[in-house]
Length: 142
Image (tube, rainbow, N blue to C red):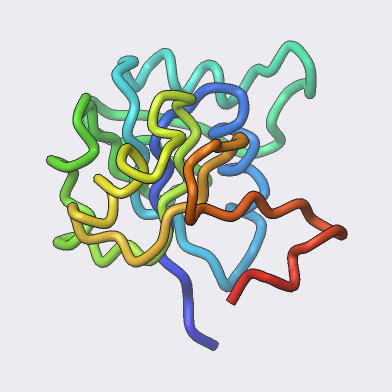
């Protein structure tokens, strides 16, 4: 089975929950997280969620990575998605969950950086970008 390599841009509530879901799937590998917050804080927020409770996994950190159950995930702090190393990391899909890059041009910076696809976590008003709702029109995803 092929493994899809994922990066998450923005590790707020949506990014963290996407992480938790993807982390449970053997066909997905979370390779990198891009967020401007330090790794100590990111680790704390991943472990302790005021809405969803304690994350039932061991969470550790170093200066440049989160370590979940012994598995390392690279943490970056780059403001401009165009400068992210998605090509070098072999990223298949970026989950764009910052809330800032929600139009075609902004999300497209991830493609310029080498990602193959981008999933924007919120609605967009850009033409040529489909809004997909699970159970409604998810058959449009190729």
